[in-house]
Length: 192
Image (tube, rainbow, N blue to C red; front, side, top):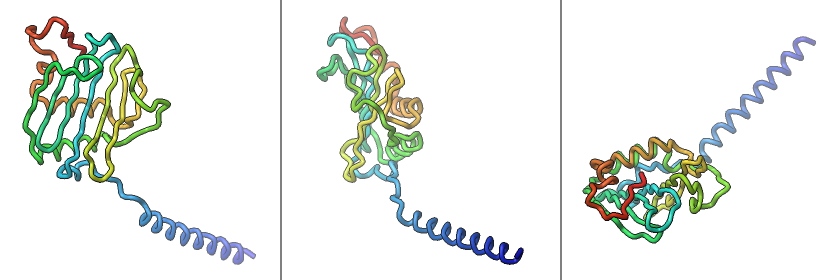
């Protein structure tokens, strides 16, 4: 009787091992390989980080946008909600620099999303800041528009602080660029 029970246990374990091996191999071959952000550096893809200040009247509201591709880095400061440009600065970029930036953003989870009760950042966190993390001009459908806020709502699941710092590090003298000298117009109020 002991031999029969031992044989049944052995056959059961053997069957379980075979099933695990077969399903393990089939799941590996059927998985979709994730898209590497850094592999896209030559495709024309662009990334944009937007920091939008508290919701105020049109004359006081400001936002900062950093847009980067493999040839150019652009910093633009906007006043109001209609795209009025206060200042803009352009800096040259290289393919190798851009590839490293995309690898860093990928490392921090720039393309990792999570569900949210909100479809858009519009109107969220009225007394805090709202941040957008965009990809556009992607030839392979990698375009995105994720967001986070200082109030905790987000569709970006990556390392928000790391992503923001890496994007700001692309601008020489970022602090001076977003907080210009006192010679700016009287209605210019740095929000950041």
